Image (cartoon, rainbow, N blue to C red; front, side, top):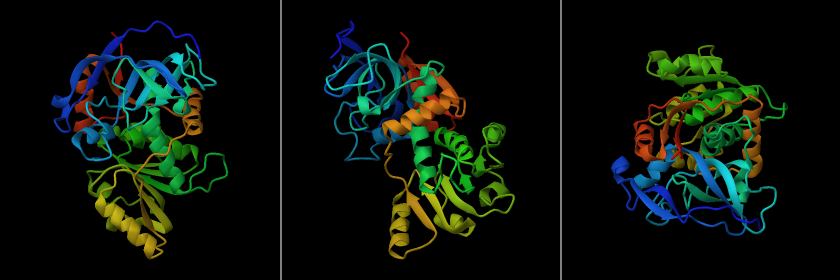
Length: 336
């Protein structure tokens, strides 16, 4: 175990002690700085990013699974500097700049210091900023997992599939567009009119304003059938997607409701070729996180940052995510 660097006994944190309440339910507090246990690293945080999952947990949408205990410090996507490592940690040392995904059961990102599992902590390339790195774990990880679910490969051996990405200017959508292009897919995307040029510049072949009659149909302007859909929004039924799919086409729903889960079960028991696949859990691993960080370093992937807020204004970041109009990632920075 390394000799710990000097850390304060207490730190600033943003937490909530009851479900519900939205931004008003967040509280600023002084809490004890944790210590790294076996296979953990202690991080001095530089940035964290807020995802819709974070305020949905606060709202109570995932009860009784999450939050596991109250008070709860939210946000698992972070970047910072290693200040101490616990027993059993290899490959990480004090001073390393890193990106980490914290355990969603424990949370802990809206703080100045936190502990992370070494298994989900990777070194951050020097050219990648803390804000850019902190955007990766949930959003880029979700996009990567969804694209793999429809058959995408990133080693040059994949088929040139046709894919639709809805809400393509959101946190997951912007990563999905770029990753789909890296996998040599033909990308059709929907987004707000103001973001169409951005989405096209990141690799989409066809971009539609979802509020126009043409965009609302979700039909490819070139008449292609979709081999897969990365569905990043709500209020679109399976019946809208079904006629647009190729034989064996899949819709991966990253925000599934009960109806989506029931449709998935029906497709399984009836051996349907066209399927709706609810993506309920993110199974991110260290190899995937290193892969994504490497793409940032090589300028093959870009984290689009919508806005930045200091930890003292974390409530504004929270509300921005709730409002749902961000283009890219919402970042909280831990500057004093």
